[in-house]
Figure 1 (cartoon, rainbow, N blue to C red):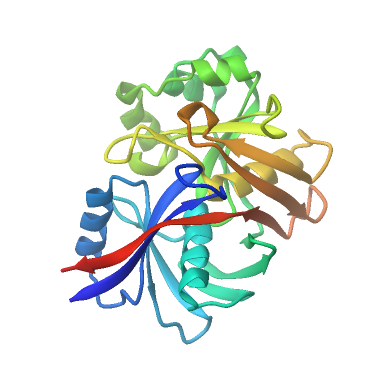
Figure 2: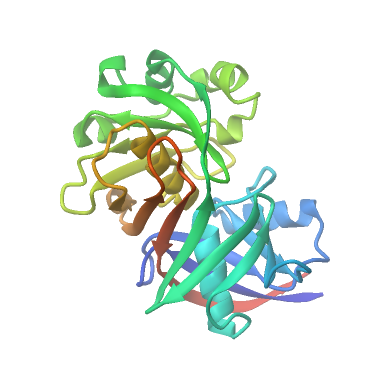
Length: 287
């Protein structure tokens, strides 16, 4: 069997920026093991697999190298960009995902996904997060907390860009951290680190350090961008619900997103995350 594939750089309008995602089209016949093997073959963080939907314009499945996840941000932007490129989608649409229906709007080359209303989960002691990422507790502002707008992340506000750049994941701390705070899921326990010092790149700057089998660091994390926006707005850490988020510049893969939190801090109804996508390669997958 052969499947059409597009490799898309998301949250950028140029090649080799943002975060890459391979989109496999009309892939409803592929089993989980094959999807995960394909992700490992690409060495990307995530890939998507599309199929027909009875409730939306398209169904999208999201895979890490280790398992399927319900939703992911940069792969959503990449999938829409790939489907627009092929004419499968022509504009505003909806996607069926494991996190529910995701509304998409398209305007002037920008793709906006409506992430769902946030859920605020377990709080994590700053000292535990600091130990995991090689920082001091004083480098962390406020209370780290698992927050989800489709996929949960431990959102952690870091005091400065200098501290953010100093962070380094300590794998020896990960098993106990995952057991205590992430239900043992070491492949999704990594904190999403954000600072309000964007240094001209954006209003915020972020990092997501990752454990194997994922690459060491995610260039741009769209789902966590939405979760972080909800966390910052909910806890009064930002003055405006609209801002520009930046990530990946220190990796040589600069990415940006326009973010808008909807609703008051105590009653957020959703988060709009907007980005661009550049189709880098197109071809066929032969299985």
